[in-house]
Amino acid sequence: MRHSITTAARRTQIVRAAIDTIAELGYDKASYARITERAGLSSPRLISYHFTNKDDLIRQILVDIYTTAAQMLTERIEREDTAAGRLLAYLEANVEFLREYPREVVVLTAIGPHLRDDTGKPYTSASAQEPDVQALEALLREGQRASEFRDFDTRSMSIMIRGAITAAVQRLHHEHGLDLDTYQQELVTTFALATRATHDAPPAE
Image (cartoon, rainbow, N blue to C red; front, top):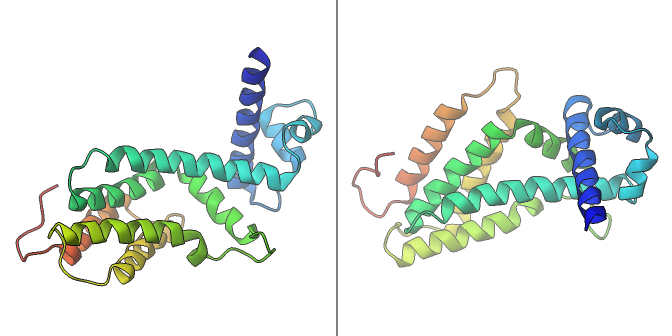
């Protein structure tokens, strides 16, 4: 048991150091030597002991970041009793992740162009977002069945929602910056108005 705990702690230490290194230096310059230095390890061989190669380490980084994001979204969404509430919670939580985990967002952006599928083809943003788009479609259809949302094409709306979140990611570290608080407010308002079933005012935040 002690060995398992120690191994898990060391893997976490390496993953954290790799995230910090990639965020600061970029994917290509994040060598084992740099990660070793960042983690305070005595030798790069300690990384090789815990991870087969850099691809294996990158996969674990992705697992850790996506797990953190999923937990944040799930916790927020599950508090809501309506589809409309869950949609707004989804939008808010996505922006909150950008605010609370900016280095992880930088790392995801840096890693993205280097990812390959099982056939060796590069992942595209569309293919990476497809599971999320489909989950949004299901949520929107649920809201339509409950008469919470108006009649609209759920796939088109889901793609637009994901596009709005992706736009925030792209602007997060842009030279002109992005006020995430304002963006979150406008994002929620925009899609509350776009999906609501009536012409009544959207629910107050």
